[in-house]
Image (tube, rainbow, N blue to C red; front, top):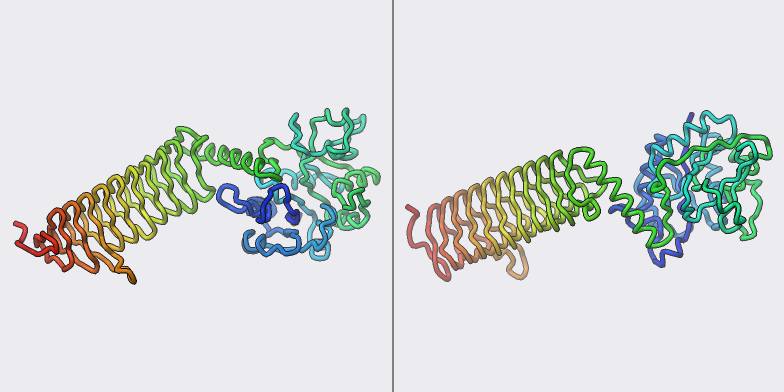
Length: 447
């Protein structure tokens, strides 16, 4: 059967107390709505239809490509929101999956079970139901003496006896498509002046149709986000989910509660993550690495057997066997060859360091190319900015740069050349030349 997904994302989200639309607040480094879009797309195999309110350009930009947007000009409830999709979907599918954008942790596997249940159901709809003593504001499922579903009562309107029920309606449904479109226009107007999808259950029962139930297995999937507190709860649940996945895949996480791994990060087996490590963006970590504590890595590629301690890496590439930190900062455009060592409080930006290069502590390397096995002494600075433009520094293989050397770019230090401690190099140093002084001058060749 062909199933189309309709995602409801037109709510104002006033309890977030924000000028930012609720469904694009970040969760796990992504806009909230993208989680629901991805899960529904995986469950149905098709791009979803997303119902948005007026003036929702931010939501359109954040939700991603390939989405069919439908505008609900007046916010008249969930039933009215789904009805807006009728003109595009009537006659185009067999079933309709309806989910809310503020349930971002709902898995595609759960959506698929709901779809499969409705395919087997001779009746017009299937509900996703959770069994929990913590209601989180969800309505209660009502059953008759034979145990058949006969209705849904919202928590605010439930009697004390009904509130004791632990079967919760989480607001996710799968409908027989033609039945849905025929009945949406018949929904009664609520006392609040809105049309609710929950009333479709009673309509189906009245007609003698069977209302099926798919039971939810994990309550964390339906952490609905209405406030910043709920958003924090969802972050915690998502972190547990992601960290559990990587531990099962062979990654050691010493303290999962303080380790943050983005959804697009890839990790190799036998890598160890220490507390307060943050891995974000499209970061790829190799095998047998040792990261943290207190380390942040964004959009970077790290090879095998690397060690990064108490450092920040942003859009950089490390080959295997690299050591960084503690307290180092590697910035955009940095490429470190195999076996490079960056000492404590070292900073590297937009530079390529060949295999075996050693950069001492308190050094700054910016806009530079350094040949293999060169040694950069402590306190060395590439003076790359003249107030208007950036200039490059080139250091040849095997060069030895003495502590506190200032390399005033553009400048080139040749292969196996040396600079003395405290030298201010303003002119090129030839291959195997020894430059000392302020300004530095070449006094001899390296023996």
